[in-house]
Each structure stands twice: as structure tokens, then as C-alpha cells.
Amino acid sequence: MTTAPALDTPHADATVLDNAAWYSLAGPHSSFAIGGDLVRRYPADVAPFVAVRSWDDPGVWDALRELVGPGAEVGLSGYEGEVPEGWEYLGGGEGVQLVETDALQTRPFDEAIELGADDAPEMVAIVERNQPGPFRPRTYELGRYIGIRREGRLVAMAGERLHPTGWTEISAVAVDADHRRQGLASRLVLDVAFHIQQRGDRAMMHAAAANVNAIAAYEKLGFALRRRNRFAAVRTPA
Image 1: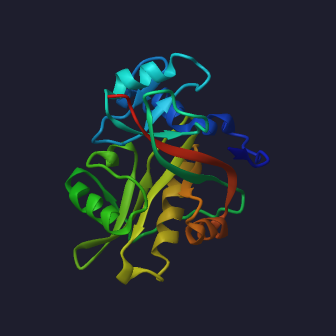
Image 2: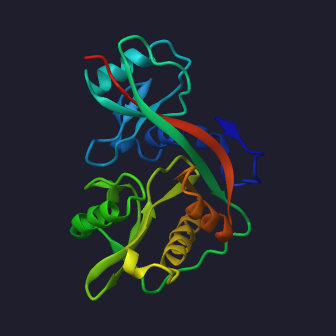
């Protein structure tokens, strides 16, 4: 993991972003938390994230296996060491974390509509078509989600996911192929960020490091790289 120089964040503690999922589940998203003092997760139909308080605690691996069960596949963020004996490493990659800067000029998007439970099947479907990241049937419960409908069909969306204290993650930015190059993604991101700021939070985002086009687009809007980190998938001992 590498961390960029700290940005000026006068209204929010940026250190919680080093472990955003944990500080979401230990803070504003505590009502979703399953687990204990070392490891917590979201319900499977809400989000796939498992959060570890600290990898330095020797009891973490036992707590993790107890939480998710034997032979389970688990996504880990921020861990770069070897997995213990009996655990299977399945693969990994590198991600980036972006945070808002003063250059971000947020504004509402009048065409956007708020999405909810009735829209969940279409939200899952548009994510499956465009693959911006994981989205489950109840992910919409984590925050405010908005979308664009054309001829009744959901063709673009974005919303809020992780919520460490003082920050809200913009996620699930998806636009169908036949509606790209119209500025929809940018306008949705700026609307989501506008409402985040209206609550007194600051906006941040995550992306795969290989998704250079999306990263460049977010930087153009006024986000800046804060850190890079590794993520991995493992299987618990059977």
C-alpha cells in the first residue's frame, strides 16, 4: 500500500479512509454489521465486504474464519502478507482511492430520479451489464442512489456505498453502452457529491488501478488520488 500526501480535509478525519469498510461498519453503517470486535461484514445481500479492525491482531484469522465459515471465499483489502497455513490465495489486484478536492464543482442533476426498493432488480441488472463493482439486491439501502431512465428503461445510475464517519463513497457509476458520451456519468457523480456535501460529508471513490479511463475522468471532475492499496481473494480452511 502507498499513500499520497494528505489533502486538506478540514471537516473530516482522513485517517478513517485507510480502513473505510471497518469505519463504516463501526460507525454510520453499524446497523448492518455482523461480527465482533475484530472482524465485521455486511449481510450477503447488502454488500460482499468483510472488514478487519487491524491485521496486527493475532486473532484476526480465527475470527475471520468463524465469521464467514469454512471453505468460504472472502475478499480482503489492505492485507499484503502471506495467508496462514490452510488458507488458499485465489488472486488479487491493486486499487486506488480518490477523494474530493476544492476543484470539485458539485451540482444537482435535474433529470436524475431517486432509486429504491422497487428499482433494485434493474439496478442489479445495469451493474451486471457494465461491471463498475459489486452490487447486491439490498445495496441500495446503504445510501442515496439515483438514475436516468430513457423510454422507461434504467440506462445510467450512481449512488452512495461505504460511509466512514465524515465521508461517503460514490459507487456503482454505470452507464449503458448506447448512452455513453453524453456526460451522464459525470453529471450523476456531481449530483451524488452535491448531496453528500449538503449533509456535511466529503466525497470519495474507489476504482481498480487498471481502470485508467475512469480514474482520469474522476480526476478531471476534481477528485485526487489519496492512496493505492492491494486487494485479494482467499478461501478459508475447509
